[in-house]
Amino acid sequence: MQRWFDLAEVDADINSSVVAIGVFDGVHRGHQDLISRAKDLATSKGIALIAVTFDPHPRSVVGKDSPLALASLKFRLTLLERCGVDSTLVLPFTKELASLSPEEFLDKVFVKTLHAKHVVVGDNFRFGFKAAGDSKLLSEFGKSHGFETSVYERFNDGHEPWSSTRARNYILSGDVDKAFSVLGRYPRLQGVVVHGDHRGRELGYPTANLENPQNMAVPEDGIYAGYLVRTKTKEVLPAAISIGTNPTFDGKEKRVEAYVLDRTDLDLYGEEVSFDFVKQIRKTVKFESVDELVSQMGKDVIETRRLTSHTYNG
Image (cartoon, rainbow, N blue to C red):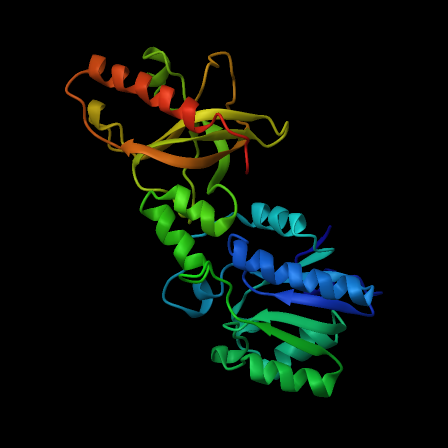
């Protein structure tokens, strides 16, 4: 998959494309369905499918707050590739881009750069200065500028739409298994393994500490069954994941750390890894003694082993 990080990087020889555009935060099941439909259109026309996304999130530039991310940009691009897009354009969302009128935005991106023959969007997609552009304007502009438009209602499970907000709320409340139903994959935190206080090793459960996830949707404090995935080797390792401040030891700093089951020989310092969350086992609590904590950790490992005994689906 080709990846472009600015309009100027797009191949000059592109003369036609099907374009699916959106923030695609997390590339959840709704996004996957939309891209699948765009892929079918591209295949039927015999032309490339290009996904257009934004970084940073538009609300971080034009809004009062930026929603916590469901995936790093790097992982988002991987997820889009898994969906079958041929190329992805990451538009730097700047104040300059935000100031373009809807018509200027469409002309600059779809007409002059991507030479779109068909544009696919969700029904809640807005664009242009003060988000003045909607699907009706997009469709009318396309008719006069040589491309068709398909607008799809937000996909749902029969109860409510699959949305980034829904997935984010599930993650923040610790319902990572419910988030899986929206994302179509395990919620993931990705980063480099850093040194902690090495207390886990002293207790017989050495842990890999993840660098502080920046602007990511982090599950609530608790113990989770999940997996540690090594980025370079793609090795998938069942792991008990802890999020919290280690209250038994009066800790103050929030940590995200994982004990890889049955592996005390791993040296992961400085290595990029991912933590994939399967299910919350329990909340974080303060134990009366270290022995009580260690006993509970043993039970957590048993439950983690049970919950990760199925086929990995990350």
